[in-house]
Image 1 (cartoon, one colour):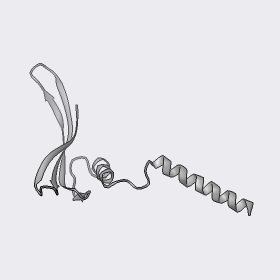
Image 2: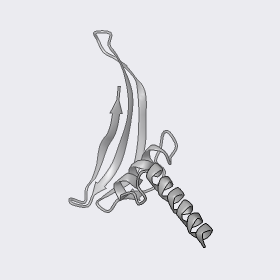
Image 3: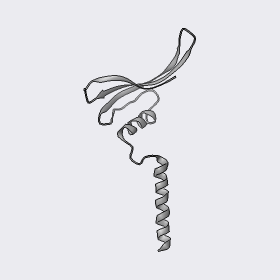
Length: 101
């Protein structure tokens, strides 16, 4: 009996540790969308629709490159441009969701 309780305690502790290590057990729709954008797709395109309830992402393109300005500054561009529809107004728009130099 004591051995069974100890085993249940150890399994519960291991499960709790895994949940804490993973961050959140139930990610929000926005977190799932962000994870798919950053990890789940190929580096240049977003091949399928994704929705979080208020915004639908139709497609996305990753833009990468180098821009050299007149004063010899070099800027490296790495951005996602998305075609999204926001349900509040029903229009499709192009949105830059991340940008780094």
